[in-house]
Amino acid sequence: MLLKKFTATLFLFILFIVVLPVSGQNAGDYIQVDINLIADGHRVDAEEGFLCQNDIVLIPLHTLCSILGASFTWEPDEWKISILSEDKKLVTYIASQNCANGDKLERMPARPTLHNGTVMVPLRYMAESLGAAVFWSQETRSVMVSTTGETEWFSKINRGKTRENIHIDKVVVIDPGHGGSNPGAVYGNVNEKDLNLKVSKILKDKLTASGVTVYMTRTDDRDVGLYTRAEIANKLNADLFISIHHNASPNTSAQGVMTLYYPTANDKVFNGKKLAQIVQKHLVNSLKTRDWGIIPRPNLVVIRQTRMPAVIAELGYMTNKSELQRLVTDDFQEKAAQALHSAVMEALQH
Ligand SMILES: [Zn+2]
Image 1 (cartoon, helix red, strand yellow):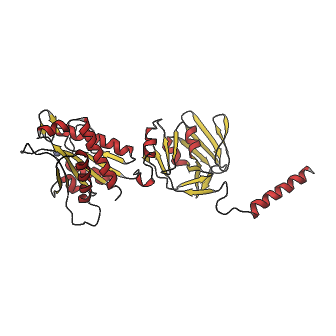
Image 2: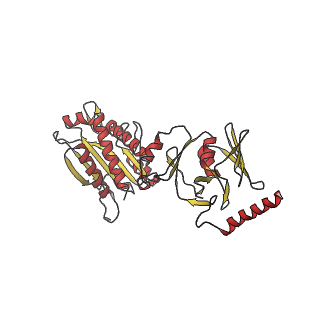
Image 3: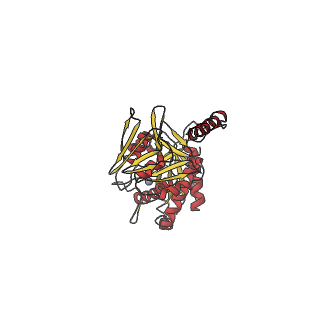
């Protein structure tokens, strides 16, 4: 009798599922989703994409393990997935909701599945079980994973607010002028190479915090050839190249900012000239100093040899005594870096 009742209930249940399909997705369906995955501040591409089941993001097993530095085995005959990381071990199966986490059996929020031959596993559950921190930003549709415990960049990227404002896929090369045996302009005991590096480092931190991938042609006081600087940016296929310098003039009363670019015939694309206009605009607005405008310079190696929009920003005259006093201050360097940051963020919209 009981069995009969159970059978009847089961039949009704099946009837509901079969006869009354909800339009669109059913609970438990896997759907493909377009999201950003950022691990330790860097964007990670998952060729096979991402899935969602009941709002839980699933990630290719091999992508997860490469982010976490874990190893895994996949035994297709048993549908068995094992992940090993230091002293931690997770074992689960395709379509199972259970996972053996060491000697504990846990219930996962989504079930591993096969997607076009790729094993997909619940991202947050797996990553957190292996000691990583995970954060989801709805605004930017980004999953951020920190394997180091450093989570400050989560909120910084989250503050980017819209997906369009996140430039995790953009690469900017910052080129601190001179270095090593080449001090650039020298006035009193101040070397241009040191000022260039200081502003460059502040700019790098600001851009990184905005999710931009940044490389510098030098990060300390060393010689780097001009062709090497351009080559670094070309090899990285950078989106923008920003070289940072300070000016000098026999006219010791000269002061103010200028931006140099390499003149090209093609004005239809976003080129060095257009980048220079944006950079100069932000520098003048922020530093409130004399505007020398943008200047075409066909013979400067770093802007001529680079294959992406490139500029040299001349932030002020070291030969002007009162301007030099300003150039060495934290306040000026912060303002200059902030202006360049705004310029890069605007230029990356193009
Ligand atoms: Zn210089």
